[in-house]
Image: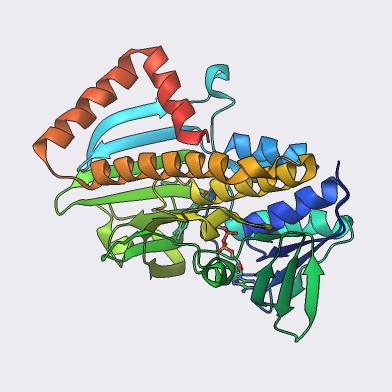
Length: 358
Ligand SMILES: Cc1cc2nc3c(=O)[nH]c(=O)nc-3n(C[C@H](O)[C@H](O)[C@H](O)COP(=O)(O)OP(=O)(O)OC[C@H]3O[C@@H](n4cnc5c(N)ncnc54)[C@H](O)[C@@H]3O)c2cc1C
């Protein structure tokens, strides 16, 4: 391993935290700065893939994630309210591919606790303000007025990345005009705690996803500002924990590297939450970034991660367009695919692997 004095991680979302965990695991001194003054209490992502847990285990993060998370073994697809496909993935054949549900803020907390055990704490209320990358290191002006030199910088500062903008790395793509809604609710009954319910191709290009995030708590997502209003079959709501809307952008940075700065996570790519891949992809970027720094293979980082990011965006977009499309061709294709998945175990296996593999 080459000698590295210090790496700066900008941003303490899941990507930045995973990067700092990996750096600590490899014995590299790091600092992690976060513009917020305290951890974010809201959860965006709820789905964690087994491959993400394996990646985190490899860099020493203990397996608390699987013991706490909800195992999302069953998926039902409805087409405009009518049953289309039901998959019960509890068997051994699917063990490696079944996703887990855990609120993002809890995942972040687990990563922060691991980091603390390694002697690293997130520096809250400190932002990277200016970044000047050279051939041998990076000089950074922080919001507390200090100017520091680092060997490498990992920019995990989210979709509006200051670092990416400072370096002038283009972030081409589009912003969807329609806001989407998300609601986390406690329900009285009728919640199968391992069932994801996806109702697609409803009139008006609508769909809803209902997925368990606790014993009697579900997350509802829909492509309209009020997610609950979009529900075909109303749930018995006990308490609305959170309800809001968000805007979707589909963008990817042209390059994930500029000299000694590596972009990772939403700073490098963003897309719709269909398929729940964003955080998983960010954590994979983070660990790959650290491993390329450690092994001196950093030249390959941008090309390799850009290719994986582009493929993920492509698949996510195909899925988003299909599930929101009301065209008869699209509906016919979906019904045929559902039949193939239900009839042929090999198609079903390939489909399930694709859902949670990156
Ligand atoms: C409704 C919704 C549901 C989703 N569901 C899923 C899901 O189920 N599974 C999944 O994998 N993904 C999901 N995603 C996507 C996922 O939430 C994001 O991909 C993930 O949060 C990206 O993590 P990140 O660490 O790269 O960026 P962020 O989480 O945005 O973190 C970036 C951090 O950097 C900080 N920062 C910014 N600028 C600076 C600066 N200059 N200096 C210091 N700090 C700075 C910010 O304050 C922030 O804390 C969902 C998204 C949404 C909106």
